[in-house]
Image 1 (cartoon, helix red, strand yellow):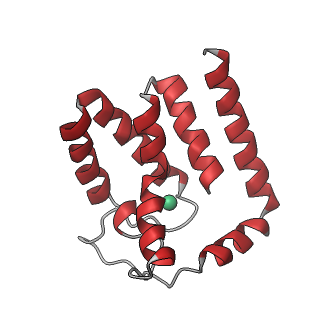
Image 2: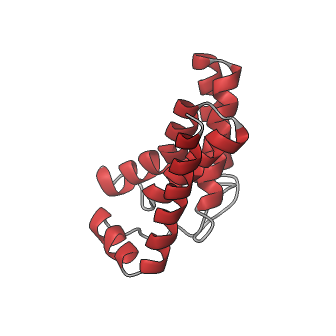
Length: 141
Ligand SMILES: [Zn+2]
């Protein structure tokens, strides 16, 4: 969920010296793309498709490099990869469209939120992760 992805990005900023803006934006980018197209515009069947692939990682990193330079691109790649790894509790279609995946229909935004609320342990873990990241980043500011 969002809090966990922000936490992972902030930890990458702190411990891997990734630039803050690209690592944080890339850390939420796969969900912005796929959930925006699935739950928002309803043009994709799943909230984990194109944005959750190695192809999406590669293309967006190349674009980030062209737009903002090499350092921002490497920070972007770290944030993006951190998002995909953090999503491993579910299906991540790493090789789509080069390999077949079963994209079962995703729930709505409210359905996703309801699912998350039934897993209080996961919420606590994400809050703790974000808290650790915030302390780690702010301590050195
Ligand atoms: Zn995701």
